[in-house]
Length: 257
Image (cartoon, rainbow, N blue to C red; front, side, top):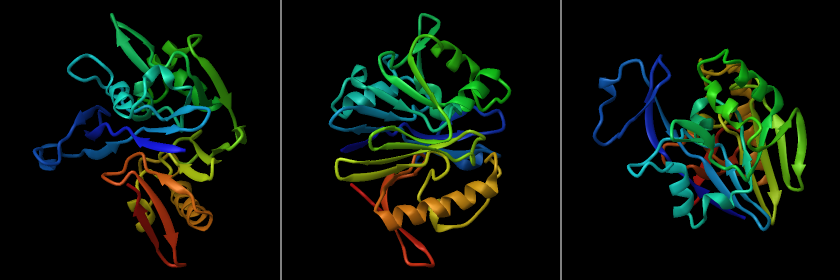
């Protein structure tokens, strides 16, 4: 199993929920009052049988009108058409924007040949357009044009890949556990989005159920430490892949190269 970080950079997001590129070296946080600052890291996992994308980033393009996500996949040594599985933790825009690409004024699937695995109720909720955190047009443009597998609760999608409804950050958020080819990997999406969230306890206002999310972070961290899982941190500032240790009082996260 090989892991690749498809980093899309840093962004500020304010009450309008627009994501604006932010360069920490040249831009000032003071110029963006009331903003959250996030970092976006989709992941690619290569196994013996699949090329797996974990969440899809914002869907921004480069100066050549190409998806950053597609270019980063190429930089990792693959072609975007080689992606066989797209596993989604949830469908908030900063995780789902890259599922589609705009061509001639229309949105088209970015990975039309890949099987997309999404929580059933998360998919249905995104289609309602009831929350501005979701872009309804993304899921609408995927309907009938991709191989869509809707899952629910807890289960094994295929041997060595398990999904689990977590319902903390969003009402139907899910996490993924990989145990295959001698490796164990945990992808927590926005339940465990950055290593710092293991090191300090807090309840986030941006979570659907902040107290549940806080409890889940601790629970997932303990499992990762006890069972030797490598953790993938979608919103990490710098170290998006790491192992976790726990001494009974505090966590230590060791970055992997």
